[in-house]
Image (cartoon, rainbow, N blue to C red; front, side, top):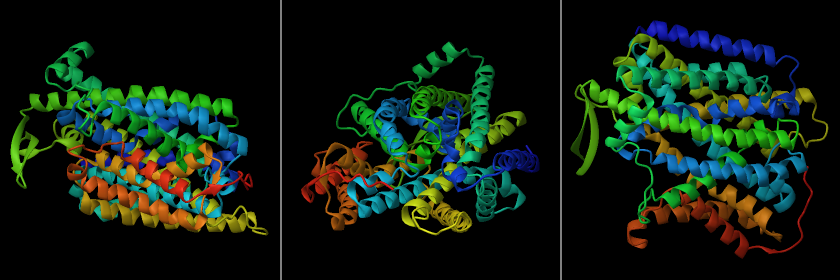
Length: 507
């Protein structure tokens, strides 16, 4: 497949996005950018959020995990599903009752200004790292399989993509993203279904036959029953539930779209619909992973054990190259499948990329402007002045994104879905603890200690994780890292707190 054809398709795709952005951003103002004028349709938000919650990380990394870990990741996904109920029935009612634009304003009224700023800053760090990690993965694939042959370097690819994202988000914000996410989720799901269908046809398998064949190879193995291991099912379920509560319910990007719906009832419908759709879609991605490895074997690929840095490592070798993990899907799609599948793959890939990148850029801009700069609380600041400040922040975050993408290129370990979960464990823990402390207790924090505690707890968890084999008698910390981190933070907040009444001064 000619890279020029693929590039033309990418540019055509962006033209459609820009057209939607131009149409939906007419008569937009700051209220449109931040919360879509609270006029979004719940079913539209629910469908579009599939793309936001899954992203290019799911599109590339989740199928790649099946070769070594089977359906292990689905344990986490079931945990995600449980977590959505907590968001729908605990957090959403709170946000609507207080009529929040930024969800972190809750911390200001309940725990004070320092806790408010600390929570917002942890979101900014968390979402910046998570979004740029996802962004890096897709840029890497585009550069390797599309633009490298044209002499376009990785750095130029990253800059061009961020500029294109800026073009269709800088004005309309959430009002635009609700619609562009819907389009992109549609393309991503179509690409998934078509790729699965093609491989089933190429291997001459029915859906039931494919499931049986994957079971014989051990790909469908899911439940891990050894408590000492990091992927023990209870750890995965609890970790997944709290990841959803933190990365969805306490995340301004995800909640910004939910609270753009006009009322709590419809917003709750959106959240519960999303929970079921996500389980179904991720299951299909895992099915795709098993099919990809079987397709690779039909082309001569095979698993083999090799020594890497003194460790016995399993690799999937095809034509002399290891393509296990994040490489399996793009390599097979571009080099071992018909050109039409390559085109469908690239459309699905960029469709998976942008719902997470554009939403993150918008949410980070909103949080920094509202929570850190306080532009909506400053007396005498006109709509025009707020808009100019918002644009400066928006462009600045685009530069930060670029720097982070370059950093992740240096530290890439080949399977970024696990890296993402580890990052979430360290960065969302303090945020989860602050909200939990505010909701579950009536005590007042020691404001001067809040930032110190929220930094100290992840540091303690890092030390614990690094020494888990010696200190925990062989116990391996998995996705429950987030829970442990939040528990340390909550405990330290409680020990340093005092009795007091809730402060309901929420601006």
